[in-house]
Length: 260
Ligand SMILES: NC(=O)c1ccc[n+]([C@@H]2O[C@H](COP(=O)([O-])OP(=O)(O)OC[C@H]3O[C@@H](n4cnc5c(N)ncnc54)[C@H](O)[C@@H]3O)[C@@H](O)[C@H]2O)c1
Image (cartoon, rainbow, N blue to C red):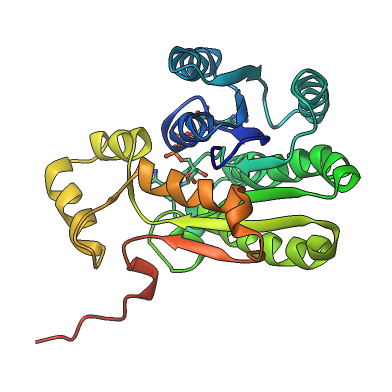
């Protein structure tokens, strides 16, 4: 018996980074995994890795900004695999900039994927979860939804929105068998971090600063985020709903350092 046997799990943004790590781990734990991403190459690579390890994966190439695509893609996945009973709303984009430097186009773009995308997915899967009386929805938020960090105002607003949505939805569905939780990673050693660092002037210095920023003394790993998602998706978390799991090496709990 594995921890995610009988789970039909949809992971968005599973063509790269943390989403791919969650998809691989869920498949190892016995779930049938819907690998959803807008990047076909990323989807195919994740599916290839899962099948290579004898896991069960479905390739779902879909743009979360397109309501019709989301509905038809998820309906087709449920028809093939069975009622979706686990969702990880993980896909995101991260434009940078302070508030007055964020164009309306970027503001709309980040909300379209990070919040409206989760809305579309949730609306597509909840009727099926209600019909079977069980489900686990996980929103991938961020420490930036809890604490202020410079230069990513719009992205941070979407992550705060997902944490609020988690709490609101958990109260709506708690008695109907659907649990809703959030996961808020600190900085994670991932392609997103590598791309960000590569665009900076002194990446190795900045990387050291990221490590030091976390009380635990290092950034996190994709596997450490995936482990918490496995728990929340599994029946081991049957009394856990409306929570926000900070997978951040203590970052969101950190107070100001005393000045010399
Ligand atoms: N990497 C970190 O340090 C970190 C820290 C905190 C939170 N997070 C969160 O974790 C999640 C995953 O981050 P990551 O580092 O793996 O990012 P990533 O950019 O590597 O992966 C995000 C995925 O989402 C997909 N995506 C983007 N727009 C889409 C759309 N319209 N439709 C479908 N798919 C779309 C991308 O193609 C990509 O594969 C995000 O929600 C991110 O905000 C990451």
